[in-house]
Image (cartoon, rainbow, N blue to C red; front, side, top):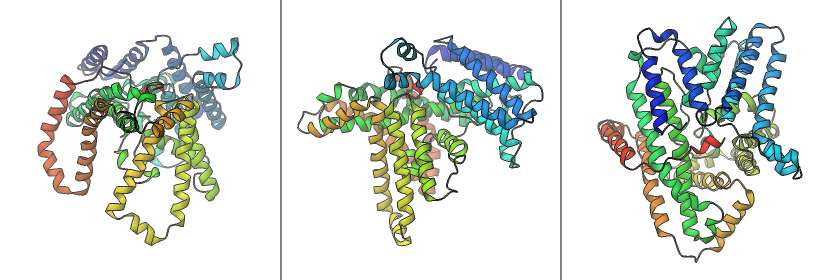
Length: 475
């Protein structure tokens, strides 16, 4: 079920009204679980069986971790089971295409459906197991996870944690120590309407007005259409896709955050203006923050982080980004995309250690910072080719067309449309940068904010593109 469809609006309104009925606190948790199952099962009902299986698995194992003496063994078994399920449903087709001949076994593996959101809720299940385990060993209060003493109560909490519909199929990835303490009775009077409405309006504007319109033009990047486009047109289309994927995913995240707020739950920010990053490492502290922080907390640190020498640190950065690339999809292009970023992070860290204080000060000059932002944006935008064209040979064909079609006639309508629908994203970034650097702009925007949000709402109503699935649904 998509957030921008009539059936979702009906589901949301019914759930919201019942959720805040007088005395509803006793069944709010169960209501959200039921609504989440309806949301997930809307198009392919059978897939909800896998979701329920994931809930049962992680509820049982986390309960045993909390109450048995063999907690490490239970954790290892549970994490392994999660990864095997993810690998079976997500990577069987990749392994079959790569290593198996065209026979019945390969045909079976290729026919396995990819459950929507399996990467997201599998990582949340692993988070639950890891957080319950370290609650028994670490004394840091911010990591403590208190689970229900009875299994039935814990099962209900786990079901909501994994299946909570605002972020079920495309994040933000929620960690157990963040979410479980929030499960309690909610009241209508406690809703932060200002925050929720702003998040929803901005999210729907980015998705429906920007991303859904841009997708009609960035489709030209697909094989074989790009072969007929000029270099300038290809560059414009790729720039448009960079704007589209940001608007699409950041828009989804803001909608999820706004919806969660209406039900009394706080989800952490998932995007922090990533195209203002001055380095690759900063980009990953701003883009898909819930994934990058998950990889850092549960994988990078577990591998040793930066505590075992420079070479091990570079290897850890590389392997984490390689696996992070594969997490995005069952195609080698995604692994190459992760490798691209992993190598960049390792090289960037290596060069940073060689720099003198004088060079570092030079790199902080305003003009140089601007150039650094442009370079990182160019680097990231080039890498999005591997998302748009999962077959790596098509990426090579695109690059060949880019360099050979210099004299081909431009597709002016495409260039103009990409620029038109990218401008709001550019202004969105400029406005944020001005408010961050100059306090007087915060006061000015506080007066202009109602008008700006009113314009966005108006454009959502009159200029939304043809509804399209969120790009990250495929992951």
